[in-house]
Length: 319
Image (cartoon, rainbow, N blue to C red; front, top):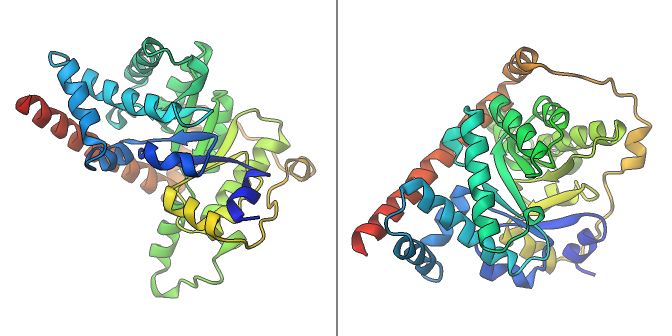
């Protein structure tokens, strides 16, 4: 049995891509997207027509509406391939505005429902700022399920659990990147691989906390740099994996053993934590890695959102 099929026996495998034509061969349950992945996709010849189609059909629509329609168009194509859910991201520039995030999320759901997609097949991705988590709390109360992204710390994960969000996406690879950069020439790749990888350790700690306290929020490891990180989190609720790494898993027959165990987590000695806004902000500020990677991630998604907007403008001018 190859590693991909072995992983599927203990973890729900999710594809992290906007390239829906690649999805079928790996047969993931769900798929996740973000502005960077959609930007990458629409610049490929096979996907450029989708962008032009949206611009031509809704030529008089404001730019933010065109953007949402493009994201939903990709989401609908993905849902034609995967049996489960698609994650679609709210504009990262709204990451510090609870009300605007709620409004934009509601709009995305309206567009999906207008396309005949049931509400339970969509997760709205929101950055795990305090304002984003609060928006997710309000959306969950309305029956709109959320995926809290750009999550780098147990602090963020606990606040998400308090908000009763559907799912969180702790970022393994970006945590790894930060610690590797900080260590510089002192970094020992072999010693920090697998279970010792700082990104893997972070997700394991969050998983243990959630399972120990019976928290229903799903944990989906994300942002992987190598297969070793993925295998070290076998047993996690879900793992969202880029097509290149899905291909590597499919090509390997190395063993995959469950590394996370919900039942074992219940036996651990873990103290409960609760955050209000002030204590959340201070605890997150104390974590330099999480603070820096959250800010950096929001900036990067905002840059790619603007690039997508530029492509929509150019398509509109040429229509």
